[in-house]
Amino acid sequence: MESESYQWARNKVAIVTGASAGIGHSVACKLAEAGAKVVLVARGREKLDAVAQRIGLERALPYVADVSHFESVRELPKHTVERFGRLDILVNNAGLNHRGPALGISPDTLAAIITTNLAAPIFLTRVVAEHLAQHGGGSIVNVASLAGKVPVKDEAAYCASKAGLRAFGRALGMELSSVGVRVSTVCPGPVDTEFLGDLNHVPDIVLSQPMVSPDQVADAVLACIQSGKPEISLPAFSGVLATIGYVFPTLAQTLQPLLERRGAANRRRHLASRG
Image 1: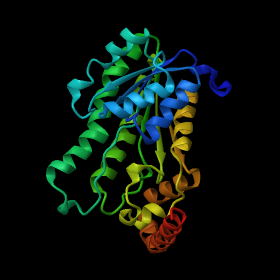
Image 2: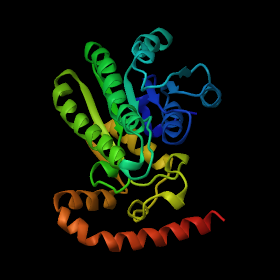
Image 3: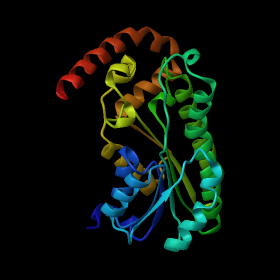
C-alpha cells in the first residue's frame, strides 16, 4: 500500500546501496511503500532476494555488486533504465568500519574503509549524476555520520571517510543545482543495526548520544529527497553538539570525559535492555 505522506515518490526510480539490511533495507522499503521502484544493491544474493520479495518483484530489482569494485556498478544506471525506464534517485548507504587504533589495523583494511565509504559513493554518484543531469534532474542522498563532524578515537579512517563524504556532497550540490540535481547528506549518530557491532567494543563517546533506529534514518533520507535540504543530522540535538565540538575543539576535549561517562552508562542500559 502506497504511503500518502510521500506522493512525490510515486513512479520514481531509486538506486539504494547497502539495501540488504539496516538503513538501506529501511530506505528501500519506505521508498517502495511511497510508490517508487527500487534497485537494491548489496553483495549478498540471498538477503537481496528476500528484500525484493518483500517489496514485490514488479517494483524491485536485486543487483548483486560490491560497490568498492567500481566496474561492477559502472553500468548500473543503464541497467536501471533498461528495467524500469527511468532513474531519479540515488541513495549511497553501503559502508564499512573496523574499529581499533590505526596502527593496529592493516593498511589494506584502512584503505578498504576509505574506498567503500568515500571513493565508491563518489564513483557511483558521478555516473548517476551524469544521467540525472541529462534527464531533467533528480536527487542524491549520501548517508554519512556524526563521526564525520567530530573525530572519534579508534575510528580514524571511518571518521575521515564520512567527513570527506560530507564535503563532497556539499560541494557537488553547489555544482549541480543549476541542472536540477539535488545532493543531500544524512548524518546519524549511533544506529541500532548490526553495523554498529558489539556494544562492548563501541567507543563510549559514540554511545553518549541517543541511539536511533534504521527507520528514523530512512525517514531523514526520504525527507532529504523530498525537500532537497543539504544536510540532516539525527538526533537533531546531537548534530548541534557535534557542530559545536567541530567549531570549538578545545571545548569538545574538555567535555569528552563527561560524555564518555554518559556513554558508558548508556552502554550498560542498552545491554541490560537486550537481556
